[in-house]
Each structure stands twice: as structure tokens, then as C-alpha cells.
Image (cartoon, rainbow, N blue to C red; front, side):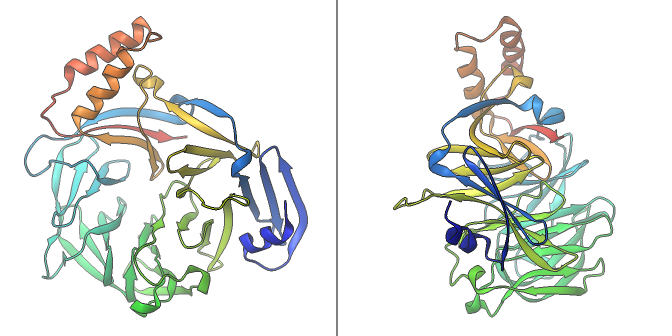
Length: 370
């Protein structure tokens, strides 16, 4: 491992001499005790089959209400809390709020140019059950976060002090908001982080270092809200960071080392309790075990529903798959056709298959992470 490369990755001052390696993963400690994980991509060879039951403490299958107002498409991204699921959809459609049984509750705001309406797609959302509010952040070009009650009515337009670009938002039990966005000089918006109190006042900002700047919208910001820290990845800076709200600074936590590869494959970083995660396009999902300090490819098996294999997403402290009925039918039929499908699994999956309405609304497998 080349020290000069690590210095570039970490992007901080002097590093402690402490640098440990385990197989294909290195861990570097800086002077503050922070641990920075480096997974060496070309050295990751093994694939581990992981049961979802090892990751979740409970699970359920949600059938979303089947009516014209509540129909969901293929590419939707939910925001999940204990009692609610909010869903942002394609441009031109309002944000939808459901309860955890899949019952449609209301549209949250609406698309348009009027008060409390949003002209651009919702890029991220947060739901505060304690305050009874839903917070919506638009894709770009707006200096506001909209707050609505759980009946979908506007309660407040929260001025952020700058135009936001692809913002991600988190809220705490007191209703304080934290925003991470892509700094764009062209939008005259160089804040990386913005903190706001429950009344919508800006309490703190963090100007972005130049390495986070982007000139256009060709990159992305990813934040999946699975851990207490604000964990995020901006594609122009190939590292997963934590934003430290108290110290008002960013801390590097994880990256893939591609060595001397001419072309790096596209990838997205995520984090769940106990693991860092990298989804590598065309290759698979890499997990880096924080305790064992090693990395491997992973294949997730849903042993809670007959051992079916299907794509999963980790967000808001949950693992889920939200798909149209035809996709679930495909997953189940593929498992039923396999030679190793046990009689118990076959019975469970056959009953599930018979209960699915092919013309109905989406179904969601969801499990709460341990």
C-alpha cells in the first residue's frame, strides 16, 4: 500500500503511523482516532451468501393499496419510518404518503408553482413522527425545504439561505434538520452542509472544500440514512464520508482502491450497521466488515420468504425490495423451478404466488436492520 495514495484519499493532514491490513482491506487511523477503511478492489475474490435473517430483527410483506391515486411505478424511492412510508415518484407526480400497512393516506403537497407546490422532482425526504411533519427537498434550483403535516398540508417553507443542488436531508427527534448538498459554483451555492433548527432557522453551515465542487448535474450525491452519523458519497470525490454535526466537519470513512486500473467501474457507496458497502455496476455488491476488517462480494438470499433471490436496497435503517407484482411473480417462479427448493419453501412460495394480483399495486418486502 502506497502511503502517498492513502494521503490523497484521506485528504487530511498528518496521519498516525497506525495502519493495519487484513487480507484485502486496510485501515488507517488519523490523529483523532478516526478509522478510514480502504478495500483493495482487485484483491477481493470471495463471494459470501448472506441470509437476510442475519441482518434483520423483524420483517413483513406490505401490499400497497390498489387505487388510481396510490399506484406506484417501477423506479420509486421510499422514505421509511416506524409508522409511515413516503414515496417520491417521477417528475410531474406528487409525493405520496402511506401507513405501514400500505394504506394510502394523502398526497403531500402537489406539483406546480404555487405556495407549497414543487416544480421539480423530490430528491429526498424526511419524516418526523415526533413533530408530525414531512420534509421535502427538490432536485435543484430551490432555496427551500417544504414542511407538511401528516395530512399533506403545508406548514412551513424553510429558507436555507442558498439554492440547493441534489440535497439529502435528515431530521432528529426535536425536528432539527441537517442538509448535505452538491456545491456548485454555477449555482452560487458553495455550502456542503446546512443545519437548521425545528423552526426553520439556519444554525450552522459548512463551506465545501474544492474537491466537493461540481460544475454540472452529471454527478450525484448518495445518502441512505442507515446509521446515526450522516453518511454520504458525492461521486466527484471517491470516498464515503461522515458529516460530524457537532464539530461541523466531514470525516473520510471508506473507499475502494482500484490500483492501476485504466477504467474504474461505476460504483455507489452505502453504509449499514457493521458494514460498509459498495455496489459495483456490472460486478456486484462488496461488503466490508468493520469488525473483521475484510471485504468480499455478497449474494443476499431471502430465507424469510422461501429462499428467493431478489435485488435489495438498504435505506432508513431497513432492507427492502419494492416492486410491481410481475417482478415478484418472476422471483417466486424462478425459485420454485430450482432443484434445491425444499418442500417447506415450496409450500410458502406457492401460497404467496397465489395471493398476488398481477394487475395490482406494488408489493414491498421490508425488514428492520438489527
